[in-house]
Image 1 (cartoon, helix red, strand yellow):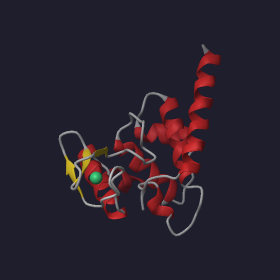
Image 2: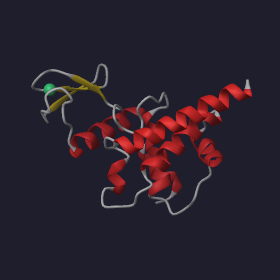
Image 3: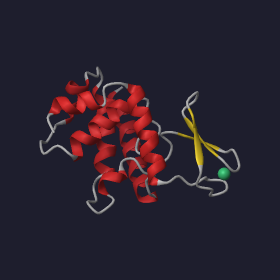
Image 4: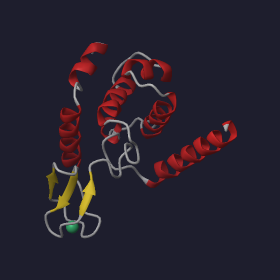
Length: 155
Ligand SMILES: [Zn+2]
């Protein structure tokens, strides 16, 4: 796919929210309280709601996008650039392509996507939009820690 196509495909945040919602529903959501697998989606606060117990879960929760303030659009473009495109992109190139001012959040996003996409197996392309496992969570903690220590040493 041409580079331009990725940006056309994920043109606005609304489209991306809908796509992420659909991907997560396709992958199958399980309620953390009662394990029920039917959910509705609340546009008002971007949360899934369990149809059985009413418990809510945010759209990004449990995925690689959790705890990030970057638009979902960035994530989706970046995931596709890094997984579907044959070209290799540096973090600076990605930052430039997304038109984001700060390097650091883009750096962290790319690191997280790299982590989650490390293993190439049958779930490979699904992984970025699925709930991640405990192994990944540990790696994320390390990254966040590294980031914090880096920040303090720079100040
Ligand atoms: Zn439930």
